[in-house]
Length: 278
Image (cartoon, rainbow, N blue to C red):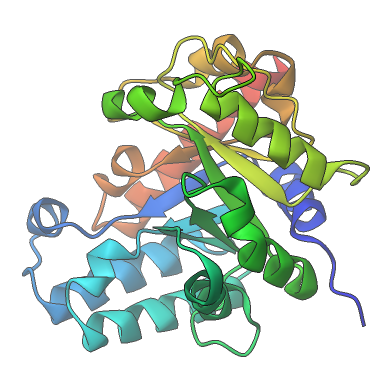
């Protein structure tokens, strides 16, 4: 039985739960602000609190893999549990791993996050295309088989990214635009939208690129990084309806109180709806 594509599942989640992605970023300073130790017990308590508070109401939860990997196998076990419990509660899980490699190694990354039999199987994963878009083929193919999605770095919010992403390709396009055009080709004809998304920072002011890829646009930078929901239309223009704004610290700093986390997520979701739809 062919699985429902990620793009269709994401569109439904955004329409019913609101277009918000909340990051799960258990870095040391955030654990401390919650009064938790920077150890596996603190990691587990933090992660479980976020999942229990939000997984039944937000469209997407986005665990940052690095903050779990730093605890070794015990951290990965916490991540596995979080992925399973979040998906069981109805949230789509976007694994923020930013993997990028070639050949069999990329295939192994794809098997880790995009194979339904993997304990880390997620609804989507972030990847880096700057070994060439073709290097992502194992992930794109695996995602298509499992009904998962792939979010490709395009125009990131960090200032260092511009030296690569804004560089000019041989045909005169920026490298970011070249990658966006590849994504558009992957999504051609998909309804209601494709399953290959782009990562485009909400802090850019003006993307300076054609974002009409017929796919989702993950927009980090809302909240603590300085962007607001009101900035979305300026950055994304006509593509704003496919934007999935991502908030991490803006919500997580309201913990460890579960009600505070829910209130913050609901407020951001309402502000995003107003900014996008009026």
